[in-house]
Image (cartoon, rainbow over all chains, first blue to last red; front, side, top):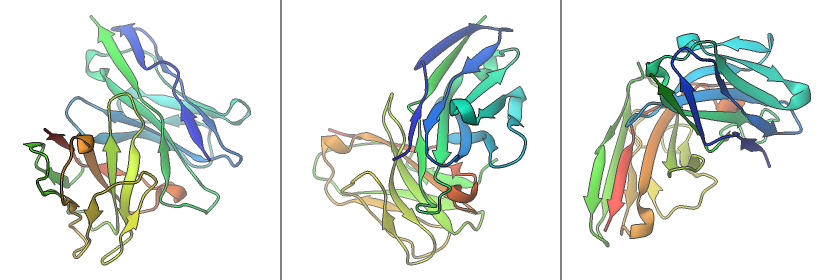
Length: 116
Length: 115
């Protein structure tokens, strides 16, 4: 079974500092990879996804993530944090082996706090 | 902006009551889902549907039931609520399955508290 590990349930950065949120997955077949963001009292929305092609993926709001197959990682970064980035971030992977097209496995989330 | 709506946003009820959480989307998506979200935990899929008259149980066992009579509507029902049902319930829809890279569009959630 697939699993997703997000290192650090809570990350705190200063405004203007680098944001790095870590995500590792376990899968025998390289999966499709997603980052979703959840702002307070809202549902999740897609930040970015990796399916095929270029391993560095750019998303909304200046975020990007790099798929590293050898490290089974898909870490999310942003060069300069804004106060508006404060939210919870979820990494998710889907099974592309064809067995369970509906299934998306989520990590436990990382709460990002941005300090002024 | 996603066009998927959930009502009620917040609900506090007593044990034994029947509740229905409504979910509607205007994007014409065939695939719809219900996830359960608890603080500090992964989202868990409890139900999904791939079209009208199709409903399937997800990976997390749930005492709730769902129906899909119309493409745009996917309500979730608890016949007799218990405190263990206290959670946030998120409805989502997608054009493609996530297994082929499809994006999920989420509603804002329904936070249920059972006393």
